[in-house]
Image (cartoon, rainbow, N blue to C red):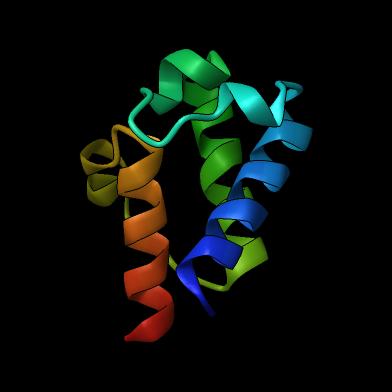
Length: 81
């Protein structure tokens, strides 16, 4: 999948799930702050990403993903591996 298409799909899925505007999702923004995630909603985000993009995310890997750009790169790497 082309990375720009992936970014668009990730942004749309997250905006819908967490009721934010797509325009609020900026590549270098902090995911937790932008989506107002607590520990439970973080699990929801992981489940959404795993089911939508057919990738697995380990608990230790979640801590490494701080920005949306980190998330895009992570998903893209998993999908192309």
